[in-house]
Image (cartoon, rainbow, N blue to C red; front, side, top):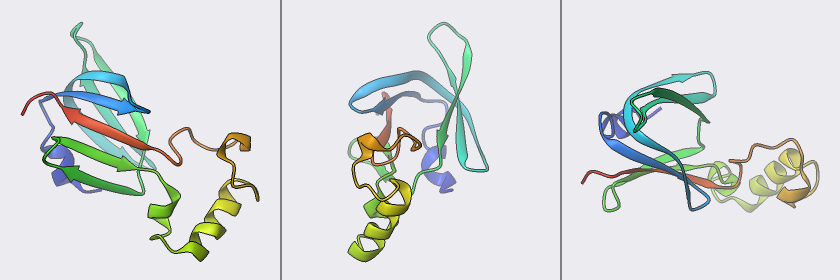
Length: 121
């Protein structure tokens, strides 16, 4: 995990966005990484610490202009944009179907991007 990226957001007010919606907000107090998940401990506006677990992304990068971290779960990133590898991954993940909506055992994050934005600039 690229700790330096997340370290920049510690003790800052953040918004966690998924599918253009804010799904969590508060102050990032701490984070840990265990197995395949990153756990964010966020202090809410009601002064309660909540843990939010997200799967480890295929790629993580810092967008300094937008003051956000991008967690990328798209298969083309995992396949390094190689069409043959992408085809193999899609068939394996989606049970020989490239339609995400018909696959019942995939994560909601798969094929999407999650953003952690700092409200402080």
